Amino acid sequence: MNYYVMTAIEHFSSTWTPIRGAAATFVGALLGQLPIHKRRTLNTGLIAKGTSSLREIPLPQLTEHIALIGLLKQKDADVRRRCAISIGLLYDY
Image (cartoon, rainbow, N blue to C red; front, side, top):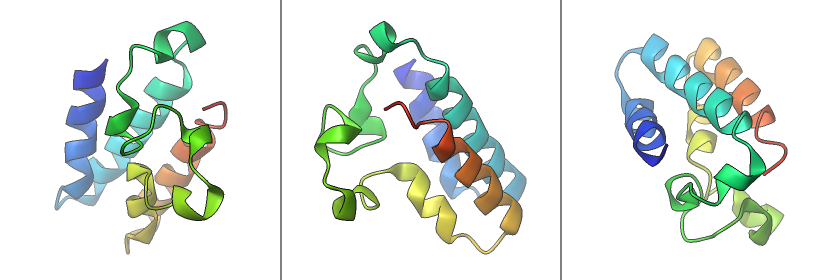
């Protein structure tokens, strides 16, 4: 699982906007459907730098820890839309 997420995060810096949007969708869908007991095996450092849970991060600092947040600053509206949807799928983290 870590490999898939890490590979997708590498695609966040692609020069092609459809690739960036698809990578965001993939990460959000994959992690959003991951059962709670399987989340312990996921290296959350891939998503949240240096924490074991997103709940440990104070809200003002959360934006600098989540890899998906960087995609919200993209110029392409489709990338921002797909990223926002993906972040919404991570509500349970």
